[in-house]
Image 1: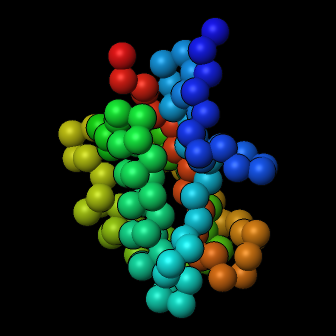
Image 2: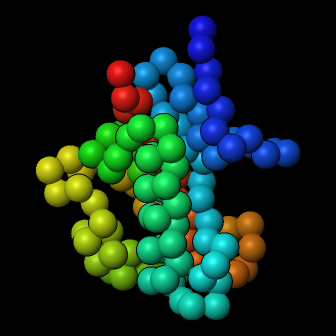
Length: 118
């Protein structure tokens, strides 16, 4: 059994690859905290891209995406950014929920599951 852990920190890995599946931990913004919701979403989606790339995958590999919003009133903005970002030929399943995030500065957290490259 092979398990690959990507950027393992003190509490978790940014991603884990096992049995043909990439599990990406919830990603939160770091650089755009003062820039508003849209900037935070773009940053987090860029983080997802970076993690996917680090394991040889792309947006086309996504199977499922989980989005947590601090304010569900931001749903329409999320969708606008999402529609520019998502691979139009390979849209994953997606769930979006309202949630109390771990910092009041975070407006969004996104986790994902993708098919690993063979």
